[in-house]
Every structure is written in structure tokens, then in C-alpha cells.
Length: 250
Ligand SMILES: [Zn+2]
Image (cartoon, rainbow, N blue to C red; front, top):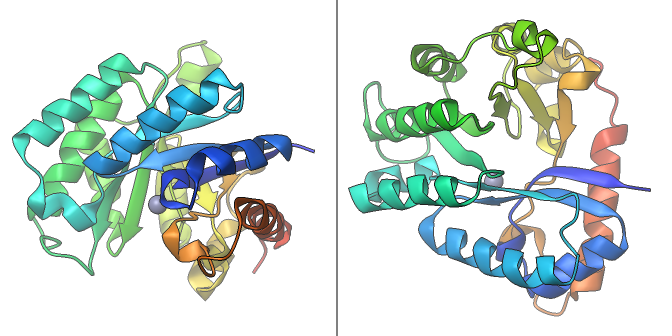
């Protein structure tokens, strides 16, 4: 059986190269997300080594700047991100977004600016955008519209490939599902997406073809230093399957 984890930070797990092998052996495919400069490098290194072994067939990857570090970003980082997108035509952008727990969240703040610039990059390069939002989804939707995202279904029918917003670890309500669908969005469901009643109810409104599933596994997923890549891989499979099984019904 093949699995697809739409959002994982594989280079934040112990022994990423061994993890890539363990996951490959289980038919576990994934979108490997890198959301700050050190992680961009780590993902590129892993990509080189694991691809040579054939362990990344069916996997993808994404480069972006997380809202947590938006305030510390230099112009050079944004130039480097642009270069990465030029270098890797199959990479997505993100995760990028807004998070009320971190500095620069306010209206017109630095988080908004860094998100807007990445949304614009995604749109102009024609890449799907992995969106992180803890807080105001309405502002995210407005920025997506501002930079040019629009309903892609009409274009799909005409055979034109357009970039899609992808709501990672989705936690919005029914209004955001409707707004997202009008922009051709995908919704990536995490175990936490079932926690809030408004989100649980909204999940039922997402057409199956717009649903994705994810673990968002990073260093916090690992129980202790003694846990081997094999054990972590087995737990990832179980976590993803449990998330998929959870009925998207209120
Ligand atoms: Zn993440």
C-alpha cells in the first residue's frame, strides 16, 4: 500500500537518510517541507543522497520561510529562496503564513509582508503554496486574492496548470473552506484538524479530491533519543492512517 504524507519535516527527524530508506521501504511518500535556511540546505543534501538510492520516487519538496522567523529574515534569504525555486522547478513554496504566537503578527506587520512576498513568488513561479495559519485565515485569503490566486478549476478544464494554495494542518471553519475552494485550494488534514468543532464540521464540506493528509512530523514527533528510524517510520505510518481514518464528519 502507498501512503502520501502531505507535510513532513524529515530533516528534523533523527538520521534523515535512514528515515528516507525506512519510509521508502514502506511505500510511504511525502512532501518534505523546509521552512528556514538551514533546513533548505538539509533538504537539498538529503535529496541528493536519497535520490541516488531511488528512495525519493513519488516524493516532493517545498522551500519557504515560516512566520516564526519572518522578523529575522534578510533580503538575502528571499533572494536565496528565489534562486532555489529557479534551481528546482518541481519544488513548492512554503510553509509560509501567519501565526499569532510570534512577533510581527499584527495587521500590516512583518509576517504579512513575508507571507505576501512568498505568495507572490508561488503565483509567479506557478508553484503550489504550503500555508501555515494559526490565527486569521481571512487575512490569508485576502492576500492570496491580492497576489492573483483565483479559481483554478476553469483553467484545469482547459488543461492549464495553475498554482494552488494548500492549507497545511488545516484549522479554519466553513467560511474558509468555501473561500479556499473558490481559489482552487487543497486542505491538508492533520490529527489536530479534528480537535476544534468548527473545523471538524468544515471538513465535511471539502470535496475528496481537495483533501490531503499529513503528520507535520518534526523533532517533537520523536519520543526519545533511543527511538530508531524504523520505529519512527512505523509510527508515522500508523499516525497517517489514523488521520485518514478519522471520518471527516461533524
Ligand atoms: Zn510544518
